[in-house]
Image (cartoon, rainbow, N blue to C red; front, side, top):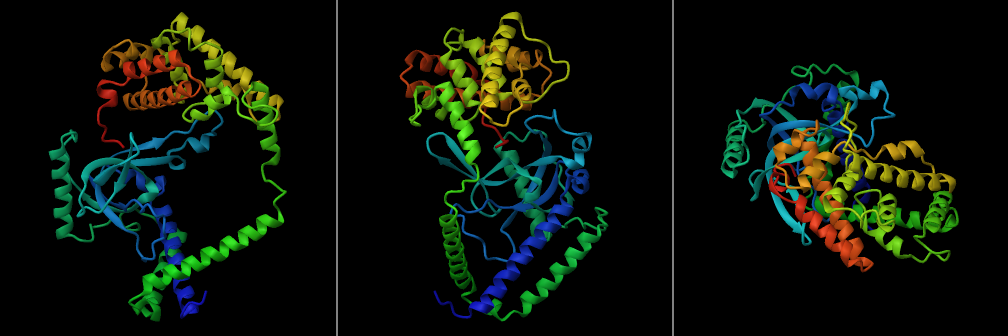
Length: 443
């Protein structure tokens, strides 16, 4: 494939990649929790990256497509388990955060139930929604803050808030960004050095002869396609030379041993009934849950008890001084622990790298009572009096629980377990109600 002015195009393409890499380095410094947390107050205007297009093709623009919104809140992202985290990692500046931002979005349906949310520029058609974005998606923090209503549920209130943002930007197109050095007091030498390199690249862009070409975007697309093809050819040649050396050969063998001993596959790697069930489960530990299902534990329980037990699969936060569940629920939790320990020990015996006790302790009984009451028909404020967890965390857990139940419905259907399928559907109907499943702003 011959491309006109290929060397100049390569040079310009490399400059774009360098520029974007340096801009990311700057964002990583400026929007690290250490520097930006004090400025993530509700009402502050923020410039952020729009959602990438579905075709996954790279952008050949020097600047990313961005939009504006208003910060509503920010939240620390909790890991699966904090058991092995050292004290240094517990500090706020070492954690990951997401920011809840009110901005313009387009909502489309992906399939029957899944919704796809796209962040779009303010001027484009869409609806005002609060979306949760990672900090590294922020481009600019404005020095301006809006007074916002505490109740952003009404559509009119959200529309008016974004209207204020648009009016402000029409007067101040730059958005009055906070100065990293002057306002945020960032004195890092690496930041200053990176900024100087960005400024030098910007001068090169202005002088580059390719930049004046009217077909620059199309030419860069052709160059990118050629580079991708070249890379794929190299990869295929490399894989052909080392096709017998699988990176995870030992682990694959170990996991197959586990599946054979548990009865999920035959000695010829043919999937058995248990394997079909496990394949349908992706939102909880599929081996432990499948074992409970085939041991008859779920079949013998009342719907409320079953839902309470399944909550242990979706709750991962560790509460201090959490109340012990009632005797019958505690007995169910003990059965779950015994099953999890058996599964973990078998994996350990089959040479799968796993800490048995850590695995068992990852199942938490902290919201069993609350979920039991919710399935019984209690009001949300009533179940909040039972547990010490944050209401947002409990809502997310119940929603994840509904997702697990939907997968179990498909699992039961795949093996013709009509009774269990009906039981799981009844469980969904009992928990999927009221404020927990109201149209959420936090998507």
